[in-house]
Image (cartoon, rainbow over all chains, first blue to last red; front, side, top):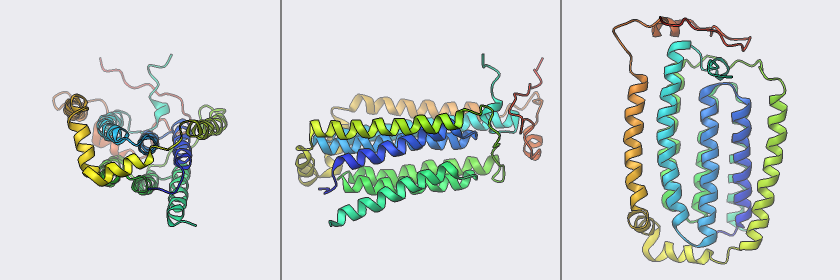
Length: 102
Length: 205
């Protein structure tokens, strides 16, 4: 199959996940934050596929399937919330939505 | 030098470079296009590891459908809208990068340590599975036998998500809201831009 050792795929997934975490913490646009969440989900998918290869079982790939479905549902609901907030506030900045903050 | 190593190297560079470019992209559309590049690179990584069906799904659903949805919403909310660059929590940016570097180090350490313990001696099993029933058939057998209940539950999840999105974005016609959507779209500058302080809305009586 692949001549590349699985460690390197996991390292790539780790890098991508970290970029996603930093992006969520640093960026202020709600849509861009959502994209970084997608990036983290993609990194996790890569670890699932890598471990499916390491274990020699197909189950990891089935889990990627479910992650995909949940990601699609999450994007639909999340973008709907962003559009609803934008209609009220004319801004997608997450710092503005702080009414419930203690 | 194996050809697969070359392909993996290109995939690694493209994925990581696009992710970092996404971090520094000022424009949301550019960030979305870089995310498409990351997802296509990951599809190549899936192909290299024998996950052929997942790679196809990755291109069709993620890089296709989900990203079109993102771009649609970006266009709906206005493309030329710039992100507010003034940080309301000044220490957060440096702290995020520092802790992110720490997280990377941890993940890579665990990955190398863990694989060294587990080993990948079972890798030929997946190769045989891809040969004998085929990747799609093996996936379908697992999905429709052992994972049948989660599979059915996801259908409920999708229906709930669709109904929820419709309810959330529905416009209520009869009492006009304080900020009409058209007026909100015409006002180009966000009212709370710059200061980062929350601005109170008119509380409906």
